[in-house]
Image 1 (cartoon, rainbow, N blue to C red):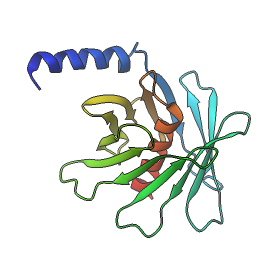
Image 2 (image 1 turned 90 degrees about the vertical axis):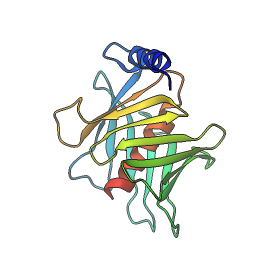
Image 3 (image 1 turned 45 degrees about the vertical axis):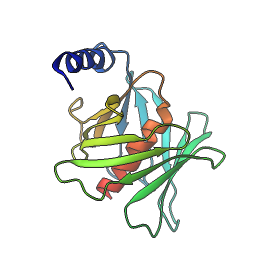
Image 4 (image 1 turned 120 degrees about the vertical axis):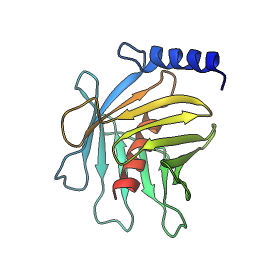
Length: 182
């Protein structure tokens, strides 16, 4: 990418993802000891906005995203018997929203592909194990995940560009976290 075009892209990213940017910000705070892998997702004001409810005693891992009224927004399920790791994100009516797959070959950095049901594929790249990565579409960043924004253990932030489906991006983040940290 030519220098001027790259500078313009970085400027646009700062306007969205910078300190005073327009991105929606969430705090993912996974409990260290959790019954059934339940945890809360909070907004930047510290208010709980989603509960991630892990159901125990299932053949495969299943997580349910619920709003504050207890309504299921989506669920994440592990795919069984696959060559590569993958998880499916389904809507409240069991419609497939996305499939998250780990790339087989990733020589320098972790790389994942997200097949969106009715939209363009997304790429997840960066240091997944340290919660320092981006989610992008083509060459554009649509979300950023970082543990550097918080001092608390097992806490990381997710910034999402306006106009994106926040619940799908948050579910992708949780699915990648589950597959990477097993």
